[in-house]
Image (cartoon, rainbow, N blue to C red; front, side, top):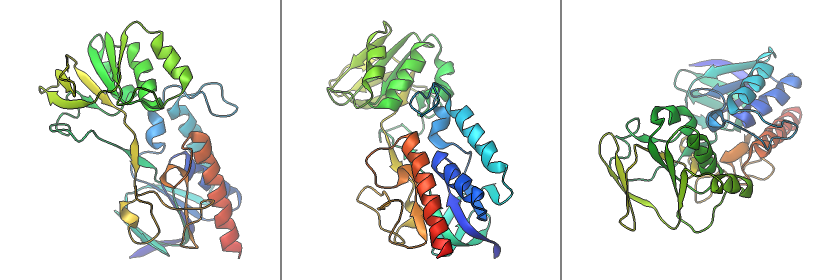
Length: 295
């Protein structure tokens, strides 16, 4: 049963979706933001954001909290915590309700990739983690490993190095994909060992107490933090709008092949996925919605 009609429904309460809702609110557009769990998404785990324009340093929670409060100050925006099950051109079905809408902005971001190893899922909470800032304190004074060569993995290492005894950083390549400034900081740390051209092949113990690498090297660790990237949350839109081979929404200037459906943030095809580009997408998507509604 349809319970409400909106001018725009935004799927996802990360920085892109919230920015879009802010711009729509300022235009007086009746908007619903649907977020599955908690606003912010993966950025909530960021301890120190230093590349957002005009902000020297801020943590992810504070940034999202500020933006959420800003959005909630507008009466024309509703924020509900419901999982989206499916959409069509003019309605969104959540785990609780069905909503009609004139336009949709898909901004539900990415989900963490796994290593795909035996016992990986059952060891979550028993040595396996995808969030260093969430679980790092549990490993105080112990040895841990981080897998990944991008900024998320590098940030995890820097955070954990202040808590644990030793951090092994395992990367598949010879070169890092993350920022040089982060790599330089890690290279200056005495309790970090970088292991290049390697990957984890086996998880041993429950709780985890050892991992094996592809060169048969064994590392005695109590925790393994996995930061190898993400994949788009687009399962619920299969067949409705065009996706690329990796599942990202094909879009140009946030526009999709469906004239009233827009894609914003990390979920769409783009060259750079950063907070600043996510916020930019949100503003652009909102402007496209406004133009579509006025036309």
